[in-house]
Image 1: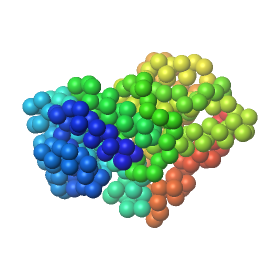
Image 2: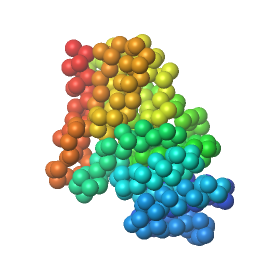
Image 3: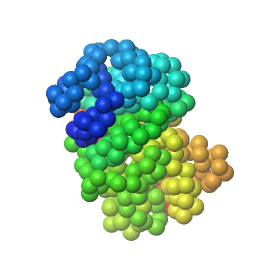
Length: 307
């Protein structure tokens, strides 16, 4: 995902001289092409993410299109006040890009985990919240946010995530989910880097006689309300999947909408991380297995619920 982001940002920088890249002391080699082509539009702001965000807000107020980038908790939690007051309050088009969301940096411990960011960022007025499902969605999301005039948050995995889409996404829209596979019995609404697990879970369910629709629900704010309504009306079970806390995340957003619109909440099941820090040693695959976020565990829970 991060390689796709760097490449797409460079292309955007080629096309639009307003694009400015601000890095929080990370990815220096990753952005070599951008720096070589646009040396006056790249700033390594160091381990000073709050300052970086304030600088980005000022650049946006002066007509530029700044993009801030570093590891998820450092570009969100560490500078939440600046995102809220400098960026969102003034409704300026700063794009905050986070790498290693959820448990992608599981091996570095809780300081590098990010399972709360969607919860507090989607509560901020004016902010678009997007979690791409693969590298193609990263590219499409970046281009989409650059066409609108509001703050945006793009939440990425780390690296090596499999590509689910076969190529460029021509019809990507903010707030419009993408159906990956059709089904009849259950609808899996996947947010962000859980998409490969959702696709695999759908295949496992098919093998067990349950037909699953798999949807890449990449935008947590604004929600694709039509997709939610249609899924709740059509399917016996609708499952939200995310590598984020069950408190306040994508699943919470869907549950809130379901309650507010008088839909049958009994059809909804949420799968995410529990309300506790993950303190075990191990990489992302280990963390997912321990927290019940792997494809086979998702499929087993769906079968049990349908039964």
